[in-house]
Image 1 (cartoon, rainbow, N blue to C red):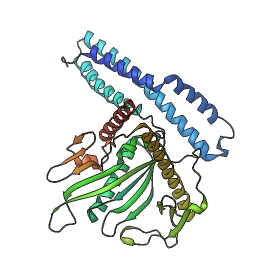
Image 2: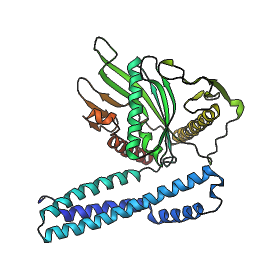
Image 3: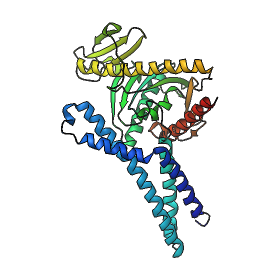
Length: 373
């Protein structure tokens, strides 16, 4: 305790908080809350349930942002008082409590600081995440299922609602592919750093000779489409196929042709949905994801044109962005940020915030460097 310079630490906390407060633009935040509160109070709000849900969700998120900021400021004030009292009375218990609270506030500020870096065009959106098994046979399919559980557990830890929209099971074990929504503000900006190729190295549980196996899975993250987005898809550009939903091992779980596959003919983009009960629901869900993918594709094409005009910018995302090694040692390492941990079980149980935070900072640094060139 004697080694902690609380005065210097509290000054540093205030400086960090003030920089976050400036970036968060508290006055605009308050104005947004006032405007959204007025709209939420209109008598005909729920005449359009989808629009009403969007308004109330955004209001709740903005209120949470402001509350998070004001609470942190109060905690810093309270910490300063606690330190003064503890020092005046030479109270070791109070100083111990102050040391614990200091670390807790540092962590909260770090988390809030990362959120302020989410300033991309679609970062505020909810996310649609797709996982596909790659090279590695049954091990890759099993790995895809492990990643699905990892992300769902991560969302559960944060209290983010999720909805699994489509699962395609492999014959022996695991998943060929899966698609799910994360229904929380900034889910896209947060999870988009998870996009890329993930690699697993382990002793294969499916190899009777106990050999080490390397397998791969691809993660795709797209922003969820909104009604205001101008993505119109002519009917003659879409091919619709219907089929029966199926469960693990090919077992039929639906005796009607309720599953839907949409193919966007000009781009070859394919979206399948089978987890809703009716064909109509699956088609609506598939169309929403198809529009989201085409929206992102449109933005990528626009960005590519801008980069071409600005000159060649070296790509910063490699094919393999993260390795999960379970044998001959235990380690998960992000190949972009160099962040690594030895507790692989915790990672697969959804403890990936440090990887995400490092990824967001890495992306921001790369964007800033590209803009300065």
